[in-house]
Image (cartoon, rainbow, N blue to C red; front, side):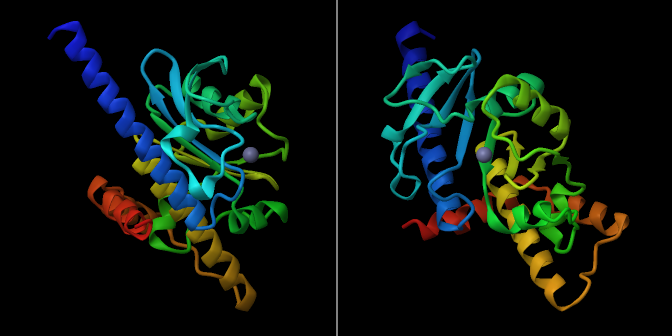
Length: 234
Ligand SMILES: [Zn+2]
């Protein structure tokens, strides 16, 4: 293929990825998982990533609010600066070659659990996909390489981690997966929290967790969850 043709394909796929990232962040905002903070990224080739600009309005995000940065945080393309916690994304991409997308937010329900040291339990089927859940034992912002390494070490090879009195992170082989897992995580935490108000919630057995994983870890179901929320954006 000729160089200009290849460049055109690259540009088209970058613009598609930008739109997906915008949709992801707006869906997270609509679901009350992201507020005026929070960020998501998509890994590009050559140690670069797409990420929302730190100062952007998540509720009315457009592709102009997405910038491309390198692993040092330098803006390669786009307007504005990345969030101070861009280190979180870079730290995970450095540690995990399998990860192509990262979502980080400060959602309420899962954070309530870490605030009181209550561990995340698999209380509904989809929520069991991110169980067991590692927890970073620090509320500090992931705004430097040392904290990013601590978080990546805590996450290890898992799809999600919570950060004590701070928030949660999910990763995926694409942005659909990272989005859907953030949704499942927070919904599970909500159900766990609410059930704890009236009793001791039932926690799925190891066998039930593995059955859920077998049935529910499925790109078709992930896409359906994504489409459900995507349709609400109009
Ligand atoms: Zn944060």
